[in-house]
Amino acid sequence: MRKLMTLEEFTIQELRAFPKATGQLSGLVRDIGLAAKRINVEVNKAGLMDAILGATGYINVQGEEVQKLDVFADNQLVSVLRNGLFCAGIASEENDDILVFDDEVSNNAKYVVLMDPLDGSSNIDVNMPVGTIFSVYRRVTPLGTPCTKEDFLQPGTRIVAAGYIIYGPSTIMVYATRRGVNAFTLDPSIGEFCLCYSNMKCPERGDIYSLNYGNYGGYNDQIKKYIDFCERKKQNGKCYTQRYVGSLVADIHRNLIKGGIFLYPGTAEKPKGKLRLLYECNPMAFIIEMAGGHATNGKQSILSIIPDTLHERSPLFIGSSGMMQELHQYIKGTA
Ligand code: AHG
Ligand code: MN
Ligand code: MN
Ligand code: MN
Image (cartoon, rainbow, N blue to C red):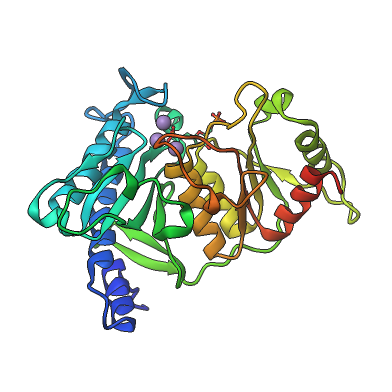
């Protein structure tokens, strides 16, 4: 049987390609993998006696009801990264402000991590796929000092690495750097993430479109016309297929593999839409663009947006380059 390369072996192989590399990024991704394994154990217990299901009763900075698994996932990631050697601090969807790991070692770490510790929380209690999303940036403040908000309000073009873990029928980590996108399936028999997809490419076209139709009434006319186009038979007599899980990680993972487009537009009531620029839009845009796809807010590339605040939201259009071109013809009114 072919021996599959583990995430650890893969990051070390990557290190060999860059002899000057310090190994900090490889170590940081391994730390995130450890936290993901611990989160995976809890996600897989839904319904069992000590499962952590249900809500905490708190409302987070997003105005959402915090699920127990949101808190568990956040804690797991914060503790491995705080105890690790490679992260100066964290910004998380679940925490109002940045977490500065102000100690001698952490202040000399050159990276910061931004994360959505548990994505798709509304799906936890109904046993649908959920995920963890992360991105890694190089600090812009001097090493040896505590990281500051400036280290976190960087545009997505400055992402060094980004990834997600999808807790689905299999638990898979998709990890992207500027060298490419690779995926690793957690092999429970050895407790390691093993390389399952190398150099992933998002198909230029697909026939899947993903959106929450419940918001259709609030979309502008250009978006409505695009969605009406998706519903109509194409020249080849085929229609597009509509798929929507309600977990960004699941919807993007399917479209990355099969080809497709995901839309979370703004509405009259919420012009910036729902998704968080730092914790969801940027990392997913980086991953999809490194795989040859495209991501915009309808006006500009997601990765070019200069963030103003930690929890700002952005409309998100993301997926296969050919389908994104089609969408933008409708947005510009040239379709
Ligand atoms: P989170 O659970 O981290 O708050 O994210 C949920 C997000 C995202 O996963 C998904 O694409 C979107 O919410 C679904 O929103 P709607 O339920 O409004 O469609
Ligand atoms: Mn949330
Ligand atoms: Mn999310
Ligand atoms: Mn979340």
